Amino acid sequence: MIKLSIIVPVYGVERYLRKCVDSLLAQDYDDYEIILVDDGSTDNSGAICDEYASHSSVNSFTRSLVPIKVIHQPNAGLSAARNSGIEVAQGEYLMFVDSDDYIEPNVFGGLMAQVERDNLDVLRYRLQYVNPQYQVYNPYKSDPFKGNDYSETVTDGVTFLNTRMSTACYAWAFILRRDLIIPTDSITINSFPSGRDWVGLFFTPGIYFEDTDWTPRMLVKAQRVASTNTIVYNYLQREGSITKAVNRSKQQKVLDDKMRLIGEMQRQAKKLQERGLNNSWFSHMIADTVISVIGILSVDFYAERKVYLKQLQSMNIYPIQSQSTKAKLINLSPRFAVEFLHWKNG
Image 1 (cartoon, helix red, strand yellow):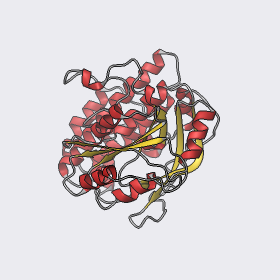
Image 2 (tube, one colour; image 1 turned 120 degrees about the horizontal axis):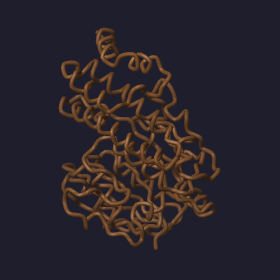
Image 3 (cartoon, helix red, strand yellow; image 1 turned 135 degrees about the horizontal axis):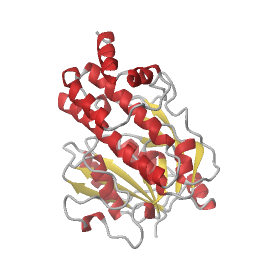
Image 4 (cartoon, helix red, strand yellow; image 1 turned 180 degrees about the horizontal axis):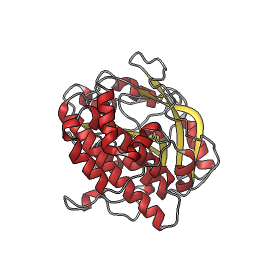
């Protein structure tokens, strides 16, 4: 069996794809495969994928051949592309890389050595932001990973989630055992009729913020989790991302999926509570998401505010667990919070 499968969803990234794949081939490790999932690209991305697969792709450090698989499928979104890659992956471990991002050179050897040394289910590594000129920078006023503890100490997934994770969570910040998602004796997602729940820990198709939905579910299932302080991942910040959408229909989906995410996190938190386990991460994440929703209602969906405020009220989420000024205002009166922020934003 191959040790590591790297799954790369690809859509409309001909400008960035070569840098991504070349970074995966510049590693001090040779027991891995690359799976490129062309999710209905309309530019030359699919052809670039085929080019890498049809030629002998050589690891520029070890000089060994690296198997590259290509899947072409109709456009179905990031979650579906990752799921397609998971199903064909042969690796004992999985790693996700977005096709406009790239990996630091010669880091796989150290990562997999730590995974095997500590018999890990999950290893979390560090990332850094880069601009379109591939310069490292911080696009935020504060550090979104301030709450992360990058200790190598091994702990269970629930403890890791509640004590070592900030609310910033990305699927591509982890290496994980494939059998967390597909147990060796499990049926696969294609065995399920259309409309049924997805088995195991596959990504939920058709939603934004799929990483925030998936990451805690994955961690809760893991028994041995640790981090490394090594910077591994370069996260490209560019125009046109989902969370920066200006299209009205996309803005609507962002709002609706945030509401859906709140409900899903409530369900996950309840499951932990029923097991007598700590669910504080979910409380903080729910609070952050509610604050975001209130902000959206005060600006872009002010006319629809009453419908969403009523829905939030019915979810029994108040008071939200945050000490921020906005949270205190929301807990005092969600309606007044929307009105005040609408007035403040002019």
